[in-house]
Every structure is written in C-alpha cells, then in structure tokens.
Length: 379
Ligand code: COA
Image (cartoon, rainbow, N blue to C red):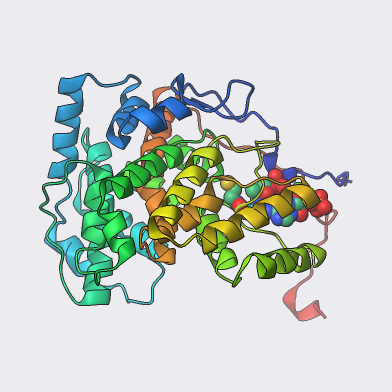
C-alpha cells in the first residue's frame, strides 16, 4: 500500500534549490548584484552598467560600456515581420501577453547566438512602445532616437504621441529618466524568484533562450509576482483620500483580503528596495504638486504595519511612481520585463555553464492502487 502522508509543501519556502553567484537576497548580506550594493548601484550606475554587470560578471570600463550600449541601440529596430505581428495583437490584449508573444515570435526569426542578450534587451522597449502607439494613437513609432539609454528611450517612445500633460513633461525631464533608470536597476535581479527559477528550469532542459524568457514573462505576469505593481495601483486608486483609504484597508483586512504590494517570501521586516522607490514616488508627487496618491499610499503602509506587521515591497511605490510618469497601469509589469530580462539572462547563462536538469520529485497523496474497470462496467 502506498503510504499517504499530508505534508505542507509550502511553495518551496526556505528550500535552497541551487547555487548562484549572481545576487544575494535577504540572506544577511543585504541585496547585492555580483557583490555590489543595490543602494550604490541605484544611485550611481546606469541600467546598462548593471545589465552588463549581471551578464558579464564585472562592471564595464568606459570602452566596454560604450560598445555594449551601441549594440543595445542597434537592436532597438523592429524587424518588419515582428511589426506585423504586433499590429495583429488586439488593442484590448494585456501588454504582458504582447511582451510574451513579441519575444516568442522573435525566437522564430532570430538566431539564439552570442548577441541574444543585447538583442532582447535592446528590442523589448520598442516592442511595448510600438504596440502601444499603433493601437492607441494609430501611429508607428520610429525606433531611431538620440537617447542613448534605455530609460529615456523608453519614456520618449512611450510618449511619442501622448497628449501634452504635466505627467508627460515630468516623464521626459531628467528626473523622469533618473526614476526610470533607478527602477530598472531595482527590478533587474532577485535571485531564485518564481520567474527566474522558471527561466532556469527551461534552460536546464537545453531549451533556447527565447523559450526561457517567454516562460519567465508568463510567470511574472501573475499578481503574486510581477503583476503586483499593477494590482497595487488599482488598490490605491480606489480611494479618494487618506480617510477613505484607512477605512477601506481596515475593511479589506477584516475580510482577509490580500493587499497587493505588501509582504515578501524572503524578506521578513522590510524590502530594501522600497526606501529608494518610495523617495522617488514622493519626489515626483511633489513635482506634480499633487500628493494625494502618495499620501494614500503612506496611510496604507502605516496601517499594514500596525495591523499585520507587513511592509511594502518594491511593487507598492513603483505603482504611484510609474503613474506619476504617465505610464498606463497595464504597462507597469511589462517595464518589469524590460528590466528583469537582464537577470533572467544572467541566470540562464549561469545554468548552462554547469547544467543539470532541474527535475524535483513530489510526494504522492492520491488514491491507493486501483483495479482497472472496463468502460462497460463503470457506473
Ligand atoms: N496582504 C494581506 N495579508 C498578507 C499579505 C498581503 N499582501 N501577504 C501575506 N499575508 C498574510 C497571509 O494572508 C498569511 O496569513 P495567514 O498565515 O493568517 O494565512 C501570511 O501573511 C503568510 O502569507 P503567505 O501568502 O502564505 O506568504 P508567502 O511567503 O507565500 O507569500 C507573497 C509571499 C509575496 C506571495 C505574499 O506576501 C503576497 O501575496 N503579497 C501580495 C502580492 C505581492 O505584493 N507580490 C509581490 C511580491 S514582491
């Protein structure tokens, strides 16, 4: 007889599932990418330097960075066949599905060669901006730009045909670039999170890079993972003021609802990335002279800590920060994709260096052995 034993698998919490030299997360070392502190990287580095660090295992010198950026710029251009596919994806599709299909289709028309990392990192902002402008404004973006960095290139192309507004002006200002750059750095890498683990599993079967990234995007989409930034905006925008927010959060907690943008599998009492994005959210709100959403966010943060000892993760204040830059809510998680692809790629390459198929086992909790019953005799 097969022994039945009820165990709580607990989503692999606390399980060390492999070795990695890419980042430390909540392990007593703080958050570091290849040994570099996240606070220093977010303050002093460009996203391109950080992507290079993750991929090539060292910070680039000036020449290496210039060459890397040149390749990223080269790969902003969208192949005609990919443009046709993007035009076919309906306007009401979720932009995460656009990213997934974009990468998947690219895998049909591009090689999985030494340039796959720069090809993907270079083209992702163009995929999102092209689809957006084609379906919302009926216009095709020109992927040529004088902007050398991904942060300002993305904001420029996203708002290529946006109506002038204070949010759009802020997005196109140096502060807009600074916030987007820091946000891309903060989202770039986070050890064995769900989407990275999936990308590594895919790589461990000797699959191709496009398939690994497509799998990562599909996994990031859910609101317990990357989709939380979008869900967090939906939450804060429900409330008209801080009083309303306080009442609303209490009611949600009473009904045992999950509050999106709070809590973390690995961190216990704070997410080190929060302080950086929170201060940018406040800066942007002050610049816009409209702190309502920021104030609502702070009230929720305070109440969540008082009632549940839960803290905001990176997604919570990213929601208001992106909103202040005029980014449509559904594009919050695709921005996460633009960034996290650097981490996914680093993990895919690391997995391939010393590969072993990732294939755990499960504990069987099903029926005991059964005798087969012919179809005619079944009730
Ligand atoms: N709001 C309300 N309660 C929460 C919560 C949240 N955001 N996050 C955790 N909790 C509560 C759970 O309800 C559970 O309570 P219980 O023991 O009384 O049932 C307890 O805290 C443990 O939560 P659990 O979901 O089992 O922990 P986990 O490690 O599996 O989950 C997350 C981690 C991130 C999935 C979880 O905190 C969550 O769902 N957060 C919201 C989504 C989010 O922001 N995701 C982005 C993560 S970076």
